[in-house]
Length: 330
Ligand code: FES
Image: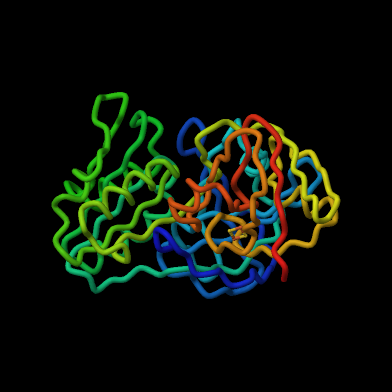
C-alpha cells in the first residue's frame, strides 16, 4: 500500500524460484493460484505482494500480485483477474497449471497495515479486493471498529465474497452497480471517526474520486492509503509513437507494451523500480503531446497531471498521437 499522493520506493526485488502448487477458478475471470516457494521465506505483512516474472509472448515481464493469504512457511496465495484488453500478463498467468515453474520475488510490502487507529475503513473496487483480504483478516482478529466496502458490477464477479461475509458479517457492505447500489464519496467514509484510517484499492478513477473527496472533507491525507493494481486508465490501450529528440530516438509503443519497456528495448537507459506507477523513478519530462496523456500512476499530483509536463513511463500512456519526451540530466 502506498500513501495516496506519494509513495515510498519499493525495495529492489530479490528473486527466487516457486512452483505453481494449485489453481482454482473463483469467478468467470478470476483464478486463485498457490505459489510454493523453493525456500522458506519471511511472510509479508497484510497488504504485501510478490512480483512474478511471467513469459508474455516470449518476453519475460514483471507483474505484481497481492498476497491474499499465506499457507505454511512458503506458500503464497494470489488471485489474478484475466484482462482481455491488458498487456498479456494476466492471460499468461491464467495459462499456468500445477507444476509450472516461476521466478518470484520474495514477499514485500511498501507500507504496512497500521493497527492502532481508532477505526479502519477498507474500500475495494473489483479485483482490488486482493490487497485488502489479508488486512480484513488481521483487523478482524485485532477487534475494533472496522468496515469493508466492496464495489463490484455483479455479485457473481466478486471473488472472496463468501469468505469475507463469514469473516466480517454486517461489517462487509457490498456495492453492486448492477443492482443500483453504487459506491459514492464522501458518503463512503462519512461515518469514519476522526483519526480513522482508510485503505483503498481499486481502479485508478475510483481511487482518485476517493482521494479528492477525502481532501475536500478536510481529512488528513496521511490517513488515506491506496494501492494501484493492473493498468486501469481512462482510455483503452492503443499504439503510439514516442520521440526523445535529445537521444535521437523514435520508437513505436505497441498497445501491450509500456513506454518504459519500449524505451528499454530501444537501448535507452532508464531508472525504474516499482513498475506500478508508485515510486516515480521512471518519470520523464514531456516536451509535446499530439493527443491526450492517460496518466495511470499514483505518484504525480493532480496538478502535475493536469499540467501534463511530466509522465510516468511504466504505466501511463498516450492517446491519439505521438508523445515527445526528454530525459533528465542525471
Ligand atoms: S518505476 Fe516506479 S513509478 Fe515507474
